[in-house]
Image 1 (cartoon, rainbow, N blue to C red):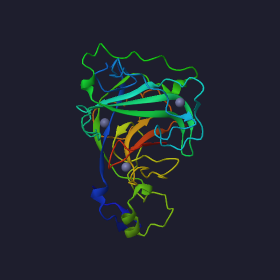
Image 2 (cartoon, helix red, strand yellow):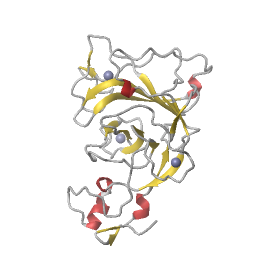
Image 3 (tube, helix red, strand yellow):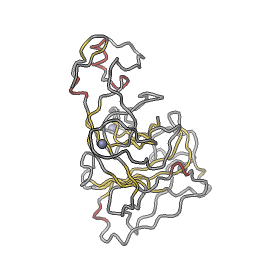
Image 4 (cartoon, rainbow, N blue to C red):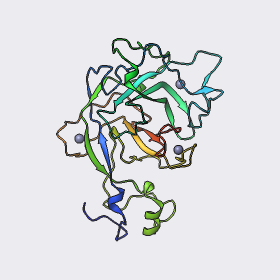
Length: 280
Ligand SMILES: [Zn+2]
Ligand SMILES: [Zn+2]
Ligand SMILES: [Zn+2]
């Protein structure tokens, strides 16, 4: 890696700041329930109820951790969710699968929900053992998208052509000790001169491509650990020279708040602790 400095000072522990992200490179396709995808069918057992939106009013504190300022009234039908993404451990072992699980399913309530930190779809993560479904023809046929669903939150089916890419954090994600060693003043947000750009694309792992906001209140409610960038779902797939041969594909057709990125943050101590979403 070339020499990177802050105010002329070499960055201490620079190599430790590098995270390797798996860039997804979504491309239009016809994925099956036993494949990783955006917007395709989920491997969902036929005898398990299809999930509803977790953001209700009054709120259910166990269902979501995003300090919602409203929700679907409980005396009316709560909207059914739509399939947003599915990732199998065989394809993406980098994801922090809890023991006994080998597929991550992401569902959206495709409407706007408001919290102090973002406005966008409500999200559920389901970590599942694919072995619960013995016969892939025997899965739940999901209900159609709820009335009032925003087309921008319902993805077009995509398959992935993943590659890996090394990333460095934006200044707001520098560890406290790095900031202290460099004498970076409190509140300083501009990346050092010549710092590699962190652009938007869908990925697993890596660093958050903060653009309009920065890291704020991302401690784990359960254990206090700083939550970690885990999945980025991007409105646009930017050309960044990741070094692979995959041509820039179409994005999944979804659009999060001013063409932003929906970032999922999970607890590094225990991925089943409450996660948080930031759209930036
Ligand atoms: Zn909802
Ligand atoms: Zn935790
Ligand atoms: Zn690539």
